[in-house]
Amino acid sequence: MTIIIKTENLTKVYNGKFTAVNKLNIEIEEGEIYGLLGPNGAGKTTTINMLVTRIAPTSGSAIVAGFDIVKNSLKVRKVIGVVPQDLTTDEDLSGYENLIMVSKFYDVPKQDAIERINKLLKLVDLQDSASKLVKQYSGGMRKRLELIAGLVHDPKILFLDEPTLGLDVTTRSLMWKYVRDIQEKLDVTIILTSHYLEEVDALSNRISIIDHGKVLVTGTSEELKAKLKGDIIQMTFKTQEDAEMMKKYPNLVSSKDLGPNSVRLTVQDSDLEMPEVISYISNNKLSVTKMTVQKPSLDDVFLEYTGKEIRGEEAGDFKQTMFNMRRLRK
Ligand SMILES: Nc1ncnc2c1ncn2[C@@H]1O[C@H](COP(=O)(O)OP(=O)(O)OP(=O)(O)O)[C@@H](O)[C@H]1O
Ligand SMILES: [Mg+2]
Image (cartoon, rainbow, N blue to C red; front, side, top):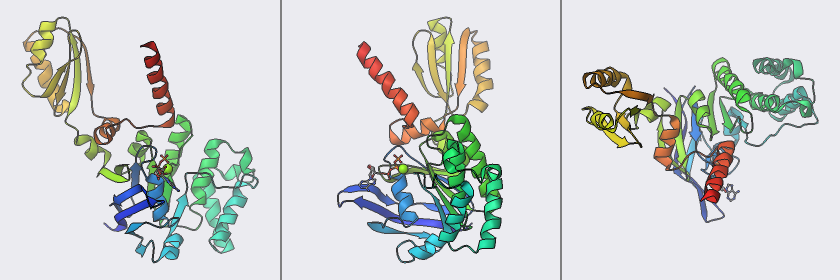
């Protein structure tokens, strides 16, 4: 296992007063897809911008592919590819022309560039649209072009800042496939930021949840989920007595009333516990009318560590609307 990126107390203070990234420590292994997950304003883009040497840290340091981001920024730039949060391709050029432009910027020899570009276009299924103007591309095609524009100079590490922001759900999951293909076929390490839980869950082997510029927790999504205290079983019974009896089940982490004849039980591991729960119900002749079992989701993990729900734009707007509506009704 080789560590390809390591930060040490990496810090960014804007305008001498606002700390956007606060003594951040992360280690990224070569070949992995590493997700930085956090709500708007958590400090994801600031972190990426320091690692790609777009902005200088206020204090602390980071090594990227063996080079110090401050002392060796030019060397860092040669071995990394960046797909920023904002679109960068030129709308008035074709996809192909955009990629050629990037290759010139990085001094890639022409023949190498052509081969590389054709390979990349194929990888994201853009070969048939390569000569079209970018302004004629759909949102998803544009994002795919942005993705490979970061790869023209054959970098060892690819930084993806919010790779699917603004895409609809279907286009987003298609994009995930391309990101995975790229990681496998081009042998790059990928570090991505996202405020979509499903995205980091689907793509990353390891995740750091960050908020207020600090890492709250790091692990695989399984490890993060396992840190939550158990699985949840919700049950409704015909009578309140049955619900009360269920709360006496021996192997509970906790239990809670959930309205009429209903309980919410937390057990260590529902996979192991369910057979016992079923026999308990049967032995005590409890009459269950409804039962659901829920494993913790990454949402729950996020909530646990940040104390708030993740704010995706659509989700956020929707929640805000619901909140306002509820307030109006009161
Ligand atoms: N150039 C700047 N000057 C001052 N403050 C800034 C600057 N850039 C970012 N910030 C602030 O720093 C904090 C972190 O911003 P950053 O863009 O890194 O967050 P983010 O996690 O990428 O958020 P998002 O999910 O919205 O992309 C925010 O509060 C932001 O307003
Ligand atoms: Mg950002």
